[in-house]
Image (cartoon, rainbow, N blue to C red):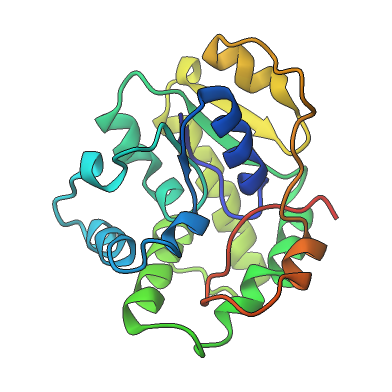
Amino acid sequence: MIGAGLPRTGTMTLKHALETLLQAPCHHMSEVFQRIETDPPAFLAAARGERTDWDAILAGYAASVDWPTSAFYAELAERYPEAIVVMSRRDSFETWWRSCNDTIFTGMDTDEFATDEWQAMIAAIWEKSFGDAQRTDKDAVEAAYHRYHDQVRETVPAGRLVEFTTGAGWGPLCDALGLPVPGEPFPHLNTTRDWQERPGRVPPGGVPGESRS
């Protein structure tokens, strides 16, 4: 399954849900922290339009969600034509904007832990998702946010696309994958409070996940 959802749209929860359903790893920004020597340069090169070996980058993963992979949903959908594309969303732009400003946008404001390559990757995937909208310009980001979702709908055939609103639970995923609903509760991970209470600090760009608060 290919994630097309933006950061802070339940992607950490979605990662764990898909790992439960598929019994295999799901790529997420949190994985990039463990692959810091390989993933940032690979995704930066991809954002620059260089030839990309997606099979090599995603070797061992059965799914991908969150940045950086979600910025390349169109390329991945073309490379893996049988894969379902899931576009995770919040209930509104305002909810998403508030969550981002309370979490990952604060991480983007410091370069204490960032390498030039990391910063370049974050900048490249931001531009790929939001065009020339400046992160501090709420109106421009909102317009780009809606354009992004419309573009996903235009790019991915309706029969392949699952629009997954935060809190939707197992049903939409299980229906799309043709799998039974697990007996365990649907996860709820990486809320705004979880993010803010995480010990230590993280590289700019943060660990995009989700919050319903």
